[in-house]
Image (cartoon, rainbow, N blue to C red; front, side, top):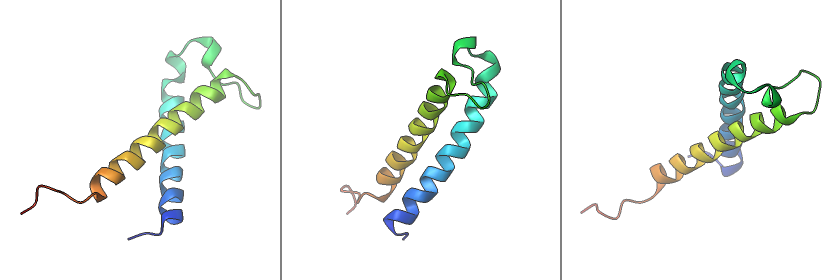
Amino acid sequence: MLKPAVANFIYALIAVLAGNAVYFLLMPHLPLRVRHVPLQIDLGLLVDFCFCLLLFEALKTVSRWKNRPNSQKN
């Protein structure tokens, strides 16, 4: 079992890589206002961050479900 700090780092790394991939794949289909412009702080960065945050929380939730003791075992 991984230490909590290492597990959090791995979840965060996966979430950032996958969240950015999803955002940049969807970006051409998003409204102009939420498309990120390189080297600028804009609304697109916030939307990208939200993608990453949602994926991070999903990974943590799945991990908790997977590691919880099953109360229905005999």
